[in-house]
Amino acid sequence: MADGEADRDWGNTMNASPLLGGPEAPLAAGPRPDSPAPPAPAAREDAAQKYFRYRGWIPVPLYASLLLLRPWPAHRVASLAAGVAVLLAGCALRLWAVRYIGKSARTRTEKTRPIIQTGPYAAIRNPLYASNLIIATGFAVGLGLGPSVPILVVLLAAHYHVVVLCEERGLVRRHGETYDAYRSLVPRWLPVRWNPGILAATPFTLGEALWRERSGILGILVGLAALAAKAWWDCRG
Image (cartoon, rainbow, N blue to C red; front, side, top):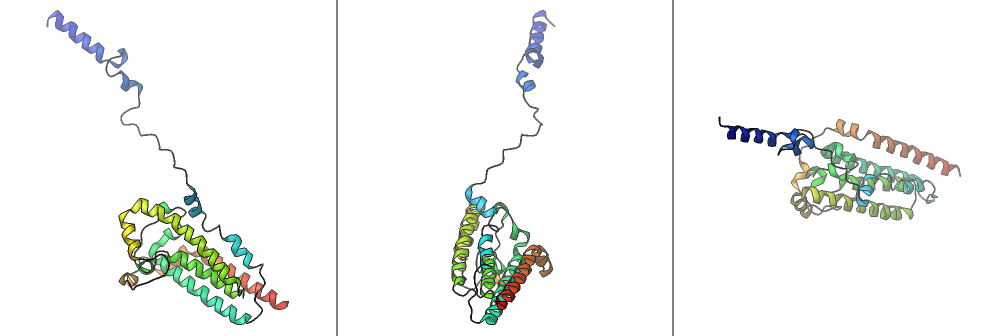
């Protein structure tokens, strides 16, 4: 090898060395190519997402206020029977919906909400919220609140409508045209046409639905006990 060639080879080696500041030096100062990327900062929830997260707690003061209202004096037994019937109808609708949506019925964020298009979701888009409204109405009727019942229904309907608007923002953002096509065919609250998907097979059994709803069932039993205690106390007076 000629002396010039040896000098050039030695110079190339020096220039390529990371320790001597050659072309590969920036790699030595930065992260390894195979090192994991730093985690992205968690996105902050906006007002709509927070409203959706705490949707179950927001109307609690309204529910509690029902026990403070004086019952309508007439037809107490009839009111109690009618209220229990309405409440059971709401429970049946909720269990039917849970047999299709599963654990997502109690999700705390709209980011995990799937699009279900069968069962009650083939008739209306929000059977869970509709069932909650029916259950609360049953309690109000059972308490014999008379003229106060429509006020409760309007306030709760407004609450759940806001919840639905918050939820739909996320569904449109994540599912796009799929959700747009679904909501163009199925109304939010009131069924307007027959859809064969209503009779589709349920992915979850009744036992699974009851287990997933165990906390809600416990809450309803507590509410029934409070309703019975309130009726007994009012009868004493």
